[in-house]
Image (cartoon, rainbow, N blue to C red; front, side, top):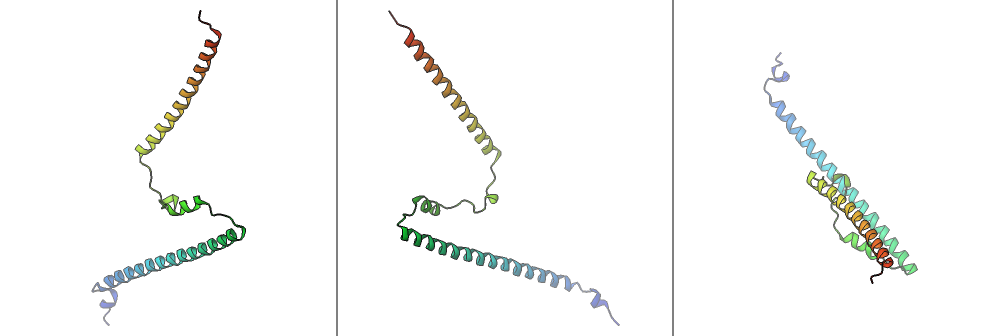
Length: 130
């Protein structure tokens, strides 16, 4: 009996296994993509049906559609999933923090200026120039 071929003497099985694994992975990715497309289509149809029902109610009760809703739908969304949004760089974070500090500083400055002007008005009202 000769078991050399069965034990793996020629190394051809590794290439076949690799090709099979790649093919299975492609099939798996294709199945995932198709399932996602079906899900999106289902949700799109559901939303169309909901919008039709909403419009029927609007027509029945003579309600005008809000303009804000139309504007929101027309604006492209940056990311559908907020967890997948672009991360802010340290420079952007520092700029936001500086802007907040400036806002706080500006509020404080305006408050102080208002108080000074009130005091100035009170003092001018009490003093009479002769």
